[in-house]
Amino acid sequence: MTDIRIKRIYEDAAESDGYRALVDRLWPRGVSKDRAQLDEWAKDLSPTDDMRKEFGHDEDAWPHFRKAYRQHLTAEACQERMRELLEAAGDGALTLLFAAKNEERNNAVVLKDALEDMKSP
Image (cartoon, rainbow, N blue to C red):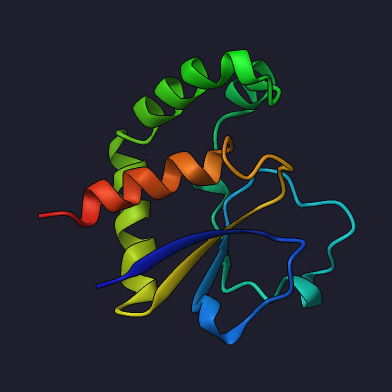
């Protein structure tokens, strides 16, 4: 069963990361494609521009952002992409990469929870 992790893209890649997917809509500043060592850029699973701008990493906006993004991820297209992401990782690790400074309140945290729910029986 896939072990889902989150990690800032600014941290060095590790073999233990397994399948590495960037889940931000925008490419992170200062990170070259070589340094990123991505298996895929899953920007189609990132929050919409409107959601991202409305959240703006404001802690007071976090509950609303989390709820809106979880709702967004229930769309059939997102559900299919999430299944594809889990399948790509197989039985190894899946590391969701993000650029945000806040490691507890960002889109990768929400996506990880949604993926965990999906893989639960």
